Length: 300
Image (cartoon, rainbow, N blue to C red; front, side, top):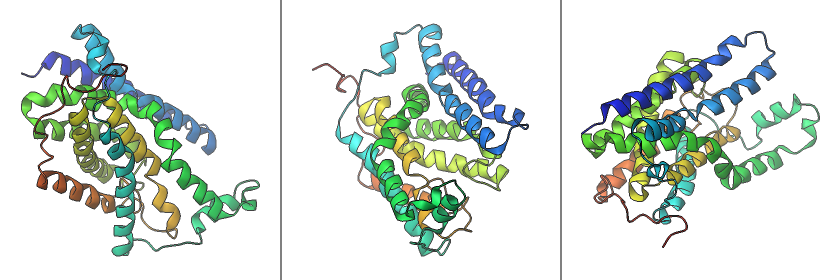
């Protein structure tokens, strides 16, 4: 049975906390563009912790359960951490190939976009563009996913660590779909300000919902096999690290709302195919979600 009181409080705290911070940049109209961009990034990064803070508050003070019930002391099957790290990379590559296949952008190994950005920066034109691209790719594939977990854990502790299990009485598929839907709607204030789908503030909200439902199913699959928010946070961190990498390899001028990034429809193809593969191979729905058998940090 759904715990309606707990769910209501979780959603109220999550949306009030996060949307307040997501909308705060609208009050910064007097700032120069660089300062506003930095302030927006900081406010939105803090806003990412809305779901996690809500999960902690509701668990401790509404449900009066121990903090350990959020399973931060659990890792689960280690192989899923490889999925979490590497799958977003593979899906990003697929999205880039789909972009090229359908002619939505043109390959540019002269890295014109990076060169232009470097030339406009003080001293930026001195470093070869290829070195800049290689260093960004290396960082995105190695350290960036771990660093990003400082922020993505704020989301995943709430979305997969708390909300998904709370919705499980509806059935596994409905729980995954509804949690992804809520996750997508939660992004709305950022999307209408031009994030992810620039130039499409209203359609972008619906596009973000589709994206979050697809990605949420994949994250949920990882969580249900480990019962650990760490695996979802790592996967989310990896997604954020590589999401914009293909843009550096395309000629400027293409529509980034529809191609070239991980959130664009061109990347949905890979996610949808992966979900179909999970279903085809009987990995979804998860037949025996990890429970108390998940490995506990420091235990066993």
